[in-house]
Length: 259
View 1: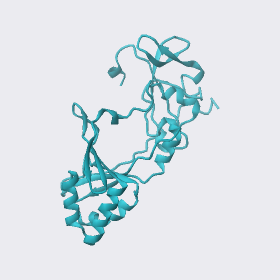
View 2: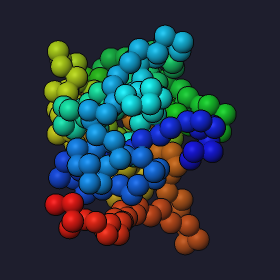
View 3: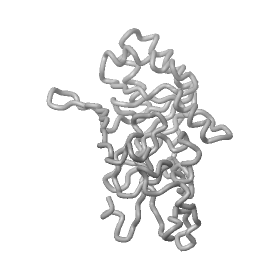
View 4: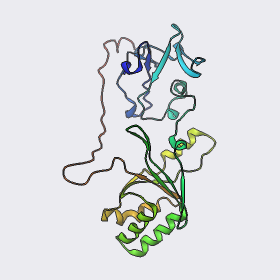
């Protein structure tokens, strides 16, 4: 990690817990910023936020040495939900949370019930930064639900027509339409966490077709269809596996002495 950042770079890690196991990170670099100086080499009072005029950036600087410190946070929990005292260490990006949505064109096509908004895939070299998406209004979802119900339990014909109309692949993630933004970013994020999780949908699977209407009724205000990438591969040779790994680090020798 240090080799990738280049020579002369000082990195200090932040490892907040906040009662969430996914925030229990191993120490990746020698220096750590934390409230307990028994474990951390730097305290919050040892660093400061400074406007770096040479790069026009807001950066963290070590008071004692005057050196810049790049803060490493291994993620999982959104910085907005952490303790307020840690926010300055994790929100030094000049534009806050970055969204790639502004970089992709929006193609609008009339469909039953309203307009379809389609956005292409966004890549950087071999990396996919944003998947293809199709946004359907609540009226369009209602029109689709009506046709699904009219065909019966396994609406193969209706799904085939709508797939051709929308131009979607057979494997998708189904999201609710994003709600209107409020006045506070943290409140918007908390509301987003309460929304239903994305649903994987295989439009070539009869069981999924039976459930499609039920999944769509969860989102009366509209849905976003997102290409499932990478998609689970059919067949006995391949499998899609989700792993949750919890790791532990050995306690330090002076743990009891420092208390």
